[in-house]
Every structure is written in structure tokens, then in C-alpha cells.
Length: 351
Image (cartoon, rainbow, N blue to C red; front, side, top):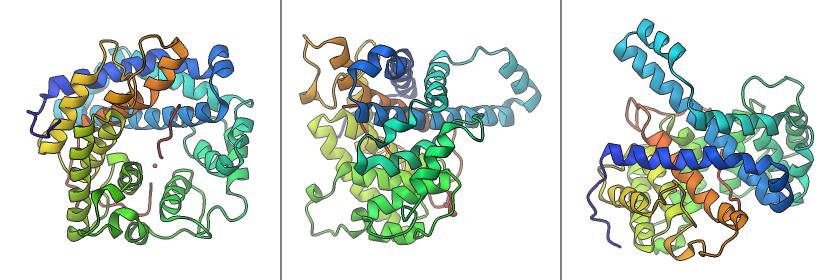
């Protein structure tokens, strides 16, 4: 598939977003229902719940941004009155209910340590992604304290990507750390070190996009890159988007759309971004889901409901995440919205 598709209009992107968010809102409760706890493997379910908490955090922030922008345009008094009378978004409310239920449950933290190699990072992310309003001494605080004990928050034996991810969550959790600054971590990344002479295939899409997400707080601040670094990152992300569109990779394409936005590009305008959005609009099912991670990984017609959920959850959530951020009001440029030392989370899968 080429990358010269006409860009879908904002109404089509809004419909894409509403469909994905609606599907997640209707089905996310399965992750913490008795049937879901019985039929989903533990570690993929833990990853899926961390993803859901990330979506909730970004969705709620995007909604707050939209209301703030509305106040500036329409007048604070009138917007406040509208907020009091407008019914809450039922899909956001469903996501919030599942996240809050899990984060309040003392039965959940032990699941974070079932897979030893992920345990401390999961505990850090669980503490960092706790929704507002939880008790200060809730189970998430104990899990966080256990996760950051020892040398987790030091540079020792970390890959550049894990180092960057750890810093991001440490700052989100508001815990002290000894990790390197963002500019240095970017210079160490695979994205920064990829040269013009290297094949594009040597870049891993998830590594590239998550690096950008962490630098830019998922689009809520600038990535803090200078002119040459910003141009380099944009070039690689746009070229990776073209490849993902050609391959019909729904999950990776949605991540790259968000990465373009995080780098100050407008995916509705760039040729690769427009093609990516068109691919996603055309691939979405009538129910709002993406039944697989790509066109070649589509859920078989005879799949069970659990198989369909496991195949559809990752791609559908990433589309929801990308579009809710893409459609929020944004001010400034990527250069102006420069990070200080603060941060946000990464995406795993419910495979």
C-alpha cells in the first residue's frame, strides 16, 4: 500500500477515535472480571491493565485540555455551567471504573511479581499510574516501595531504552532517582544513533516510538530535541510510517501516528501520516475494534470471544490512545514545548 492516500477529514478521525474508545469502554471490564481472571494469562493481563491505566491518564488529561481550551474560547463561566450539565463520557467512565477497581484491590499487586524479570518495572509502573484519589497508604504505594528498592533507580546495567522508560515512570511516581537526563538518554538511543547508511529495518518501531513517547510525555510536552536531532527523529518516524502502512500494520501504524504528533508534525498533513490514518479508518470494524495487529494477523472467523479480545485489545487501545491525543487542542510547537525534567508510560500487549 502506498503513502499518497488523501487525508481523512477531522470528522473521519473523530469517528475512528470514538469507535476505538467505545470498544475499549465496553470491553475493558473483562480484564478484571472473574471470567477474564480465569481465562487470560496473568502477565499479559497485568500488561493490559497497565496499558489501560495509561490510556485513562492520557484520555483524562486530553479531556481537561479540551475543557480548558473551551473556557478560553467561550468564557469560563459558560463552560463551567456546561460541565455541570453535560453527561460524563460513558466510555471514559468505564475505563476509570476498571482502573480504580484494580488499583484499590490488594489482590492485584502480587500478580506484578509473577514474572520475575518484569516484577520491579511493573511495580514502578503500577505505582506511577495510580489514578488520583487513592488512599495514600493503598496497595499501590507498597508495590511502588518494593519496586524502587535496591538499584532500580540507578543507571546500573540498563539498556538505553529501559533507562529512559525507568526515568519516565520514576518522575511520574515522584520518587528520587539517579538516572541520566533526557538529552543524554536520547543521544544513547537507537533512534539517535541510526545513521543514513544503515538500513531502516535495523530500527525497531516499538523502540523508536516509545523513545519519542517518553521524551514528549505522550504529546503533552515537546520532546526537547534541537533542530538537527528533531529533523533526524522526524525523518526516521515518517519513513517507518510509510513502511508500516505498506505492510498494513495497524498497531505499529497507530503508534507512529502518535509519534509524529509528539514530534510536532501533523499526521493529517504529512503524506505518511495521512496514509496511516486512512489505513486505520478503512481497517476499523463496525464495532470499533481492530481485529488483530495487522491485515495479515486478522482474527479468524471461528475465534472464540476470548481469542477475539486478546487479538483485538492491543491495536484498538493504541488507536484510542493515539487519536484521543491527536484530537486534543494543542498550543505551541515541538520546539517550544520543551520538557524540563518531568515525565509519563509505555505500552505492552494483551497477547
